[in-house]
Length: 217
Image 1: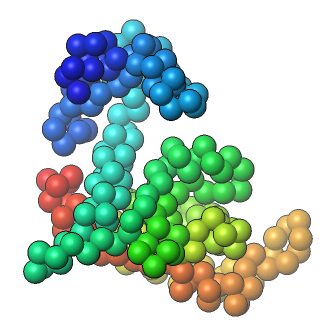
Image 2: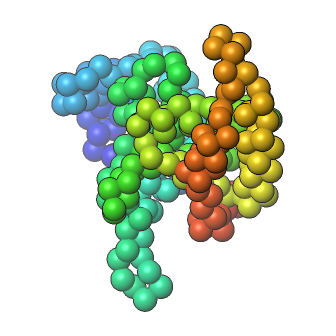
């Protein structure tokens, strides 16, 4: 990375939001070079100071997602045997480039499990309102029904956040089958759809302690 900085393809930004206090951002030359290598448009935000080229609030989220996605590939059993949870990953930016429709929720990542199941990965950092959870649930339902992925797997650093999500989801499963879409005048979810959706959402607490130790202390 330092060699790329010396070549003026990257700029080093120091920030407390990163675990090691360092974040690298593309220079104009770096963005053009990356565009040539990848053959896709690389967005570049020109700012006087490199630190202004990144959204500081997303740094922690992106680092955690990289950790979770790679942790699933390099997963080991207690006896030291390699046991990956998935063998292929798609990051959020790649997903957004592939699916641009506003009806599709931009999930934090997509993985292919060992049995071939396509699973959306979502990182839940904080508590959300019931209205926000309803919007997210309906978009997950749309993603599953359209075949973008087969299920949704949630990760978090907090078991309390998981408890709150489960509580709101249980309420919404009952409520959404009685609420009608204003355009179609049909229920937002049928009872069968609500039941299927509840079975397709997986709460993974396995990394709670590790995420807390690495990113929140």
